[in-house]
View 1 (cartoon, one colour):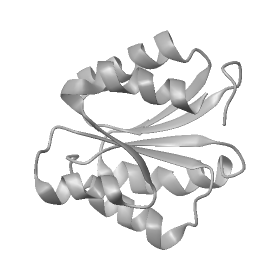
View 2 (tube, rainbow, N blue to C red):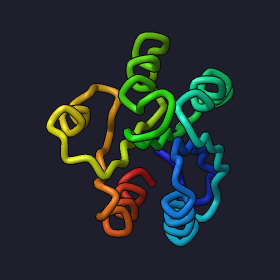
View 3 (cartoon, rainbow, N blue to C red):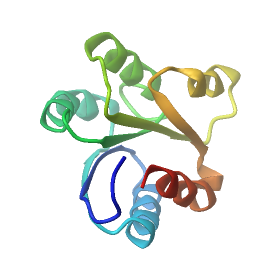
Length: 133
């Protein structure tokens, strides 16, 4: 678990600039010290995720994953992570606007620590952040 003064590494996989800005505002207000990496589509995420996980494997880090992103879906990225890594310290948070039962079932995935509907991001993200400090 992180202290409030430690620097958190976060890989945000989000194609929408407005949603990414909202996430960063909430993070800045509730967390303070962090390093944010971003991919704007699934292909870019797959190109960057190996480096992110290998670089931050020994520390608690977050992957914040939008399910409905272009080129490669968030569910496919989650599947890739599961097949490639045995994650101990990486905290995966899914954010989505989807109400599809198949997407909602991903909240039960063993690597997923939280599922936030985007309409509840400003309410739920601070709670999750406070539980991880």
